[in-house]
Length: 340
Image (tube, rainbow, N blue to C red):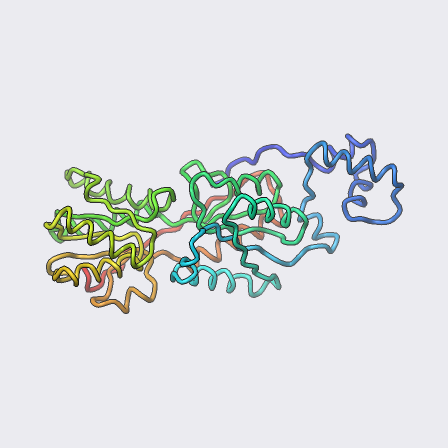
């Protein structure tokens, strides 16, 4: 899938605005010798007035590529570094970049000040492209990078109307298949533990849960939904809360394997057997899913493919600077183990 980028000033438009040739503008941008000071000032004034951002692909042709990609984490909670999802994605991105000779730089952007600082850093040519993780709804950083014409790829998306290039998994379909599996087993009192609902990924998994119940003719109620932050402790708290509301629960879909591990702890503490009393399904298929007791049934995300797809899209944007953004959605797979 591809969507048009908004218009942005070109090198030719800067040249026309300054009343010089295209080559002169290029020499000014690259700080080359042989340009009159008055001409240099005219070009710089045109660049500022038009809001022109030099094309990174053009810079690379001039031998000025930074050979670095920034992986930007916008999640303010430091605990995310301990989550398997983060380490798995970083590993897959690193593997995908291994043959390119480019460095992967980890950057934290958690406030407006840090957002502006990173934007200026990136605009200064210190990185050739940007990979974004953990982007919440309303975060303007992807828009700011797009306006600056910086090659950018998101892991996931902020909404169904996302236009910046992204790689995502079929979260709706994965959750729908998981709940359908529970329904086929005769489970009817099915709850869900979501991720943060200001993140589109959590909204999609909730929608998949609701879709499956609706297709089975079962009514849905928000009292069967508890929110987490994808961590194990939040999963434990959410499961405890759900058991208090609905002691008759016989199944739960958790928004991540880590959250599901917390739910297993809460069920054990409440004297519930898994899967005899309550079936549990996670999401992601980390190695953690095979270390829990019992081993987790889970929705597998193709994390290796997702990382490679992100790098592929970013490299294409860096080289082509085309007029379209690229959107990739990869399939998920239900992996059935002992917990359901």
